[in-house]
Image 1 (cartoon, rainbow, N blue to C red):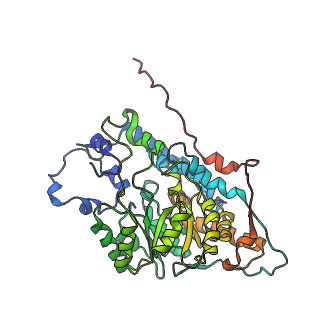
Image 2 (cartoon, helix red, strand yellow):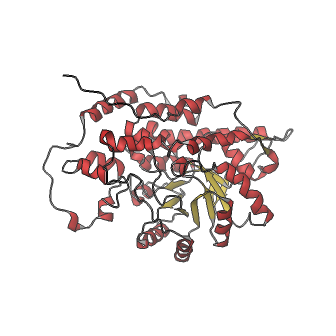
Image 3 (tube, rainbow, N blue to C red):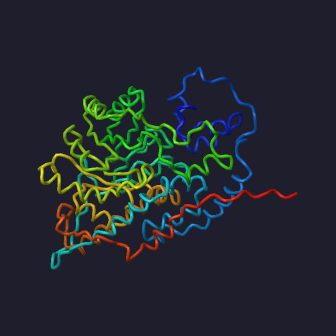
Length: 448
């Protein structure tokens, strides 16, 4: 219980019951064998299947199934936000709370998106833009577009195929999938879905026992993974209150149960990054950088790339939006002639092709999207993932024509300017999808 990321109270809640259905939504098939040895197996359980499922959950599942029958056709989805709007109706409530929520007051989660609204384009005209090429190279790997599917946990909460259908969709469209350490399916199961020529990255959560991390680095080499992204912003899980309300239910956590459970190793340091580089020839990136000084340190330590990220607003609330950090750090790197020494990526808040182009103009090598692919996969599986990629590709190509450029490397800082305020206009589609934080109310009193 002490190492369980969801806290001990959830284990006690279902102890003595058959919780297989709930468990399998959240964990890959090999999680028991990975973390518990045979000494922990005490016998066979003898009780009705899924005895942990409540009547409320059964009712909610029936409603969700009915809503799935009412899904619009995938070709009626016109932008990434549409996937989120539909997913809200078909995801189980606990899955929606997990995917949609941020930490504390969710200021950073919303700022990640709105920070892009401070940047405006300076397009060129009278350029032949009949042929536009949006392909690029990221960490030495050729890919069809300057974005990737970022690591996002527990995709099976939204769709039975989870990360498997995400992998299939990304493979068909030739975009890179970053596999999460906390995926619903195992590392090997996901990679077994690989299409010829498809590329994957792996996102590594570092545990206190470094042997596990070293073993994963070696396994990545065996499976031809193209990049290792070490997550460095989760010494503890963020205080994600929407998620906690579903996780702990009406009773809340026990008095001795700290909901902000230890997840990674709080002792992770630059020395660990140095050690990882010594045991692996795969490019090493660090994910979760939030200040310019740490990007400079990453260069000193020979890190191949950094992801400017605040974990989608799920960790430290009031941390800055990655696009703002990007706009600050790139001039510093150029002034020190370090911009060619390291690749810079960002994630968080990206919903449009224009968001991608803004990041590229500011100096990013590429951008990651996490929630967008979870929502698309939850609604339509592989077809949804493909559609999400196609929408972004189309928007990028179209807007590059409007910008007067024909290839990714032509996008630069001379084609963008930053304004001080964006308060005079709001994103009505984004705001409609955002579920506001609500204070707790009084309990209903049962009537006889």
